[in-house]
Amino acid sequence: MNFKLSNKVYFIIQLISWIFYSIFLFRIICVVDDSEIVYAVMLCGIIMYMTLNQFVKNWYIKGRPLLLDWFRLSTFLFIILDFFGMIDGLGGEFNSFKEYVVKKEYVLPSVLVVFIGVLGLKISENLAKIFWNKKQNNSQDQINYRISYPDFFYFISILIALIQLYLMLSGEVGYGTFQENTASDISFLFQIVFLLSSMILSVYSIFKYLYKYKNSTFNICFFIYFGVQILYGFLSGMKESIITPFIIVLIPFLMGGNKIPKNIFYSLVFLGVLIYPLNDNYRAILRDKPSIDRNDALGIALVKTFDSDFSDNFSEGADSFSDRLSLFPYIIYTVENENSWNYYKNMDRYIYLPVAWILPRFIIPDKPKSETGEILNYMVRGWSGNSLSATTYGWAYFEGGYFYVLILFVFFGLFISYYQHRFATNIFLGLLMYIIVLVQLLKVESDIYFLISGILQSTLIAFIFYRVFIKRTNSKS
View 1 (cartoon, helix red, strand yellow):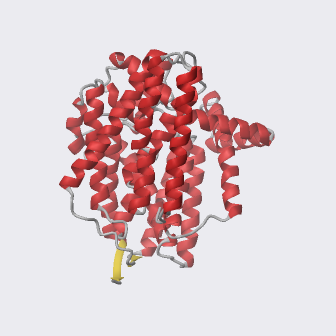
View 2: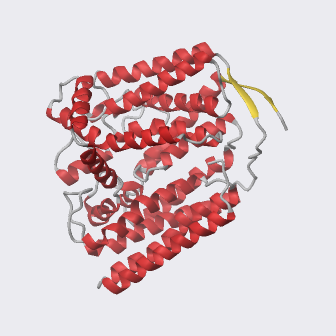
């Protein structure tokens, strides 16, 4: 994050990546008797250069990766590497997408979708240099901040935590709840609570690990709030909700020059291994007994998980983690079934984007709903109650093909590049937005429309929050 990559490490990473790719390409050319698969792997070499190698290059030259680099890295790890690993099984089903047979004839068009998207990001970065050529002030000088009304801040944070738990325990949010709870006329209230919860945790983490707050009341409230976020994540039944609080805390922790102690690191690895089997058991209980209390369901899931052998949990967790990050089959499905997708088309809904992120649905009845994942799940499986992601690339392709992928990724890249150029991380608001946006970019599953809408909402709330609770005291040059 805030550490530089040495020349030696930079050279080694670049060299190793190309050696492994060259060996893999040579094997494919020799073994695979399908020219389109070979062309797809060759195109992936260009994508690797524009994603993984660009990430490392910016880390080396600029001292830290750019915001878009995190999205590009995720693209390579969860889509391109996934494609490399599934080549031998093409023409069959995969554990990550058991309802769909991956057809070879759609592989090259699907890789082309990813290439066009990554190309759009590159175009947007070049345009951003023209539009926002002013150099960002990333001076390492420390600017001091404090919480303006600490008691009120602690009260708000605990209140938000209690509201989260109430919404969860009352069945309003979380796995197995009805979609209309988060797509109704009052969905903006749910959204505000969700945005505030991550923002408050970010504020706590910044003050603790970057500004070294040592106040005992602050520390107690921080650990209570952090614990509630973890509990909320487990009760939600959503793996992302469990992992996100750790990522939010980890970013300021590492930027503050801290190192993770070995015992904590191994504990996190152990927890990570248990998350997937525990989460799967918890979801199964909620599906079988929809009326069960979530606390009871979590307790039963814990007993069931710990009754299993550690080796079984490790194997199940590793398999579930691998399946969860296997995204390439979904892009293939998107390319094959784009003509059957009629929920939205041709970027028609983007006319709402300038105002939809701030105005509630009772003012804009036709405001797009974030239910595309459930609709796709019904399209694939024929039943509701769960959500699938076509990936960010797939959602863009659903708009109408390759042209819309290029346009949307140029737009998306310009939007993120603005944040990269506008918000310096040596000021509090810039650092807060950096954390919020970075967390969103670590996954390549979000629809660009809802991703941008969510970031705009976060920006407004972050600005208001900053003006109310954060006070700049002095700076040193």
